[in-house]
Length: 262
Ligand code: GUN
Image (cartoon, rainbow, N blue to C red; front, top):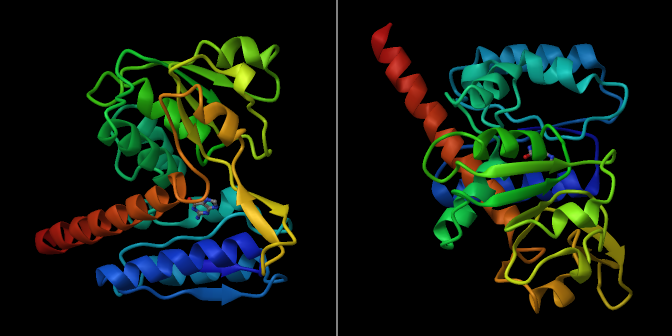
């Protein structure tokens, strides 16, 4: 894992990925670079890791500092080691219905839905947020004609007019907007299944840290109307880490098949 700078959320995410990999017996190293590291230095490091047989997977924690071109960095990771599934080749394969590495958060959301008895098959899934990390890959996954997918998907974003009229139609509502209480109880129908992807820090003097984490939905109010809703923290976050570990195992298996061939 490569982390550039000291963004507190990134520090926390990388720490939890490192902890879980250790618990599972997956060897990992975290390389921390200074906030002012050049794009060139980061690309040089990735080139080195691409060719290092000690590592089956490479993860560059996002967001990167503004002076670094994120697309250029994600493009530089060898697709066979791209355990985040963010390389354009992996994004394209996912859209075409022939996935190699699936991005961890949307993959975790799909598993949550299937394993909780809320398969998206035939359902109207409304996704709020069109990021390359969550919204777009989730849409690509759920429109596929396959088990655990085959949904009708509506993608809402900052250009969407009358958001509430669309969210009220959702059988399954996925919210990745990055804003506390962006979705309120009047915006959902009775019996909806809500996946809250938001992780927002709000000031809280009663906590030692001075903040607490909340999602993008009004959890307490929606809980009374919904069939199910994921909590923040403890809902989507741990699933993201779990699916990352699954991708690392897959990368190691791919490598061992490849090395036996050569
Ligand atoms: N930042 C927020 N989510 C993610 C993720 O899944 N992977 C990486 N690399 N960075 C992130």
